[in-house]
Amino acid sequence: MAPGGENGGRMDFILIQTLNGLAGASSLFLVAAGLSLIFGVTRVVNFAHGTVFMIGAYVAWTLIDRLGVNFWLAAPLAALAAAALGAAIEILVLRRLYTGHELLPLLATFGLVLVAHDLVPLIWGAQDVIGPRAPGLEGAVSLMGRRLPVYDLFLIGFAPTVLAGLWLVLHRTRFGRFVRAATDDREMAAALGIRQDRLFTGVFMLGCALAGLGGALQLPRETLHHSLDTQVVVSAFVVVVIGGMGSLGGAFVASAVVGLVSAFGIVVWPQGTLAMLFLIMAAVLTLRPRGLFGRAGAPEPHQPLALPSPPATGYPRAARRLTVAGFAAAAASALVLSPFALDLASQALIAMLFAAALHLLVGWAGLISFGHAAFLGLGGYGAALALKGGAPLPFALAAGALAAALGAAAFGGLARRMRGVYLAMLTLAFSQLLHAAAFQWVTATGGDNGILGLWPEPPFDTPEGFFLLVLGCCAATFALLARLYRAPFGFVLRAAQDAEARARADALPVDGTRVAAFAVSGGVAGLAGGLLVALKGSAFPTLFDIPQSIDGLVMVLLGGIAHPLGPLIGAAAYTLGVDLITTVTPHWQMIVGGVILVLAQAAPGGLLGRAARGRR
Image (cartoon, rainbow, N blue to C red):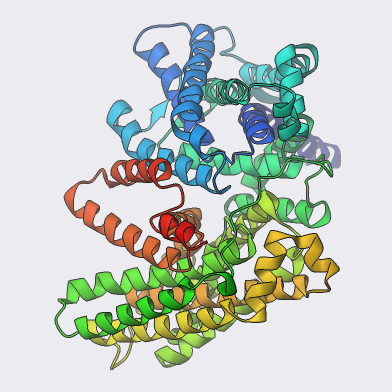
């Protein structure tokens, strides 16, 4: 082939992939714009936003395929249905949670996601659905000898049209002025007489309408499936954080970047496309902690509830006594419990370790992590590689915990001055990078085949022996955490959470203590990961999955973030409850999600929230 022909082949490839990427960015921008608007006004990280996108797509498909509605009418009708769903979510689920901990809305919206995971297949069936063509735009145009769907060109032009329409709404209408006022200073807007309840409902309706419209417009390009919600919401979070929370222009630019990276990455490095996105997000947050277009006064969630200080209350001592009594009873139960019960109890104890590790950051320091599974996975793979090399189980567990602690310390050193949702998303990026590495580094991790045959040696090869090992690890770890809680380490973390500027002015070692907190938290999570690998006899990349991290947050919030025993009670209740429900019905996610929704409303402080309030 002539050089000119080779250059021409490269140019047409670049052009077509660029246009494909921009077309994919169009619906992604709609989702991210709605997510950014909702967060900017309400400070809610809406984890169910991808679910609204998916339901909008299913509603549009139903109108078209079952009722014969024209595509161009079905899309706006789906947007209206999504707007109504958004209003219901805001009024019925979230309205009572705004004054609680900043993670409560995340817990509630995660409950909605669980409910949808079972409800959507019941309504629309378990099979994937192929979307219809858009009438009038079924053909393709020829560009440099390659074919490009006309519908893709429509999407490329549609995104800037929506951006312009949103700009007009926000800058030329009374509603828009209220939205901008609440985004800049929500408390001042309320003081000036703006009805926050109506404003929040209106913003949720607009944001969810955009998500539903995005789902409908993606039908001609996307096969509908039941994991589409998680896939979309993760990409939308990446877009919003790169662009800057609350910035529509930032969402537009970032969606184009993400669309282009996805379009070229699927060809150049298919399995690493998601890792590339999170690597870009991590780089942006490291250089510009508020995103490309984030302002210094960009919205942040309200301050979380702080744990009580030991000198002011007596319950940490009571908590220690209860914990000691509980562990003594658990050790005695090893003599009478069945192997199945011991296995279940080991799972619950491992979950307690992981929840306690996350609680150290969230509860003590007010540092939110959406990707704490990164350290669970580091510990799991560290222990797995040591076991594979012939190391005894205690040494392998120590190696896994050390690997996770070192990884967490390195991460904490980079993110020691970050807080809020930006830190949360950076932890998510870190976990997804490690997830991609576990898939790609086949020689060390086995890729998606994992590392198998990691069974413990005697005396830990029996249910009783392994349960006592897990119990001993938990007892030693919880004793260490209780000591750290009452040490200067714990006081500095809580002081920085309550009043960071004052803590720094008093020359407290805030940054160094936060790095140490990451290291300790990572080490405890790594120990949990090593024990989990030994219990299952294998290590897979799913250790780094997003649901692992979200489960940890659910456990912490379920038990009560303001009580030192909260993560332990929450982990036990969540783990045992899920295992019990799965033996009764295959629709366990719907039941667990419903219970989470009820508890978020009835006990927003968690199962031990009232005890924590009573001790203040």
